[in-house]
Image (tube, rainbow, N blue to C red; front, side):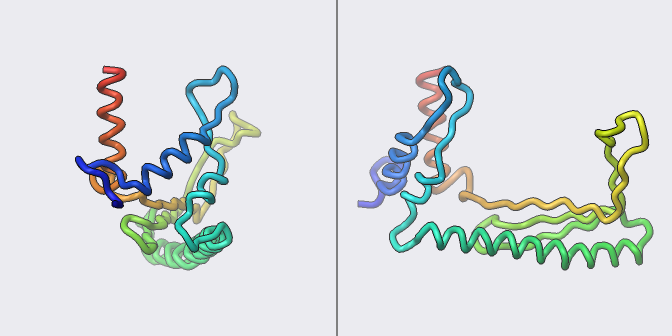
Length: 161
C-alpha cells in the first residue's frame, strides 16, 4: 500500500525520511545546523534514475538559465533604451512542474558600496541582472509536503508547546 491511513505520508516518503534521518550529520557541539550529504539524495532516487540523469538535468537548467539571461537581458536593455522612464524589466522563464521557474530582473542601473573604498564612490553597474531559480517541492499546504509539515507541527506542539 503506497499510503498509510489517517492522511499520513506514503510508504515511499517515510522510507526516504528514514534514510535522510540516518544521514544527518553535524559538528560536535553544534545543535543549530546540520547537513545531509548528496549521497543520500542519490541513494533515494526513483528506480531507473541515476546520478548522471540528475547532473544532466541540473546542467541543462544552468545552461538554459544562462541563455535565458542573455536573451531577456538583451530584450530588457532594448526596452529601457526605448523607454527612458523604465528602470526594471521582469521576466519569468517557466520550467516543467508546478511553480518551477527562473525569474530574471534587468535593471537600468544598480549602485552599491565599494568594499575596497567604503567612503569613496559607489560601484555603478548598468544593465545589472538579478537571477533566481525556484524549484517547488509542491504546494506547502497539501500533498506529501503538506502532510509532512502538518506532522512536524503536531510533533512540535506535543514536544515543545
